[in-house]
Image (tube, rainbow, N blue to C red; front, side, top):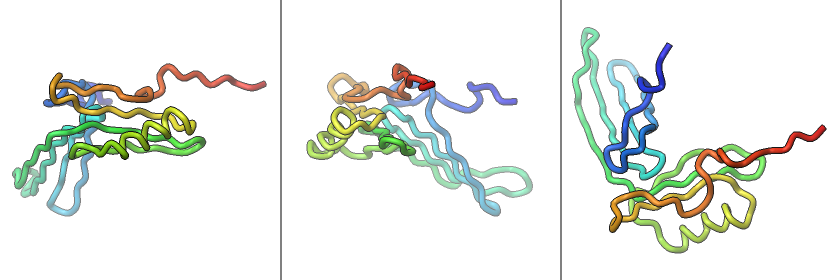
Length: 135
């Protein structure tokens, strides 16, 4: 059994404790991506495997500009990332879905001056939303 501390790592941009880690393997190659769901700092590594040992082939790390998660009414969601500064129109469209159209999720943007991510709209993980049970 794995501990939560074995399944995450601290973001190197904003310090958030639970960066998402995705791994995949095909034949003698594998890849690992760690992405922060708050600021979207992303690190990608590719490895080749020989005799049970991996050799790092490529490593990249990119700065993040914020993230959003949109859950349509009655639907499923995924995280989305800004790898460049989003346009004002894009920000307003996401805010409209979250604040006026009944979508759940959140929008964060990287504040360069403060050197941190800021929550612009919504609630991460909807931890304060309660659904009434009907009987």
